[in-house]
Length: 409
Image 1 (cartoon, rainbow, N blue to C red):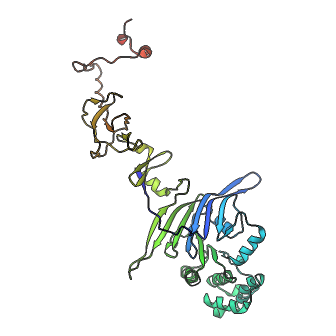
Image 2 (cartoon, helix red, strand yellow; image 1 turned 90 degrees about the vertical axis):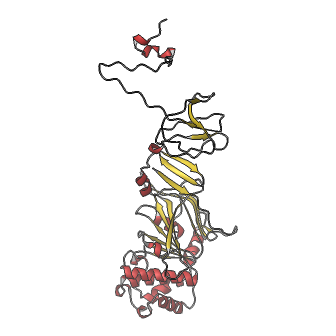
Image 3 (tube, rainbow, N blue to C red; image 1 turned 60 degrees about the vertical axis):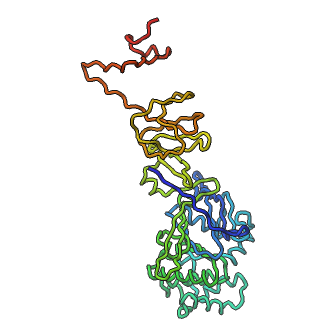
């Protein structure tokens, strides 16, 4: 029972290139009178400028907390968070106001958070421009509503729009002040499948044509076909990452590769379904085998280890199947050895581990010989083979030996 993690080289990037969104070891703790809730537990995330990606996770995983931090609505308890050149942890309140007004746009799941109900669609899109002193507001609002396919719904109010139309108005509102980043929290949670597909198409068009960075939070694990990359959050940390591979050949489907995330301290989250499948829980053994890191359950640590003092003191592989062992011993340890070799192939064994460390380059420790059968009731035990010397009993153990076997003084 084992899980293998193979090292995959990262794609080459420029030495001066810096992610547009960079979160390092983010921690967010919410405190009440007598309770502390840890929403983020050292989360790491990087997003490239102009990327369209999604963050998924179960309820309580920390994804909404992360969105609030990226939007300047909340501050982390510890860690670092940059969007462009702005440090969201150290930024002043006035800097955050300008950031929320000009650099980031929000699309919430609830329509009441996106649209002012007593204004029509055109007036709602113009409202953010009033705070930013935008010029030609009416003309820009018309263009944005036409872009999201609502040219014939400009003068309708919230109660006169369907759920999908309300979300498209919300997208136009988010784009009113030409932000660089769009944060969409469950934007398709209250619409049907066909409308959801149209909303994601709008996000994709904005991403390609205007170069807007789009981060979508969702419960839907099938969102990978809609975005370039999916990052899964579990227990306040990034656990896995799914990257979409676009086929260059017409007619071929896109593929998706899933990776685990390893942070700067070497921590990773192995998918729970993998651990359950191979029976790993509690303590585990981690070993290096060529270009892979192998995680074995503690109960699966069986076989015979080979220890190479000169080249790989901690390396471990399995030894030949158990059988009659050659009566060989080493001068330094007295541990019986089946063979001494350096390059011989080593098959799998199910015998318990036996480790030898000594001056010999590689020593394969033999499996223990099977114990003799116990005599039946009323029968005497078989006599030892001729020439076998009786075992010596240490003096401290004499008190535990039956009287007939005690050494006479």
